Length: 79
Image (tube, rainbow, N blue to C red):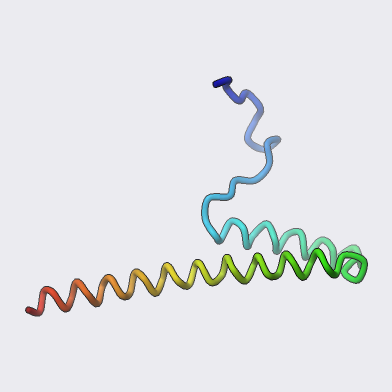
């Protein structure tokens, strides 16, 4: 595979976690509202908001899974 010699800042954004997706969507949506284009891009913004919500849910789900794992561990230690 070829090496990527392009500087990271010129390549774009890195999406590794749901919070990264939320950050990018927030940036895009804010720009549309700042430019006054929210009505023109309402459908796209609505789709982005759905993606934002799914990313938020994934963050919360990981929090819930971590809490459940901690409870299970505490339950096993108690036995």
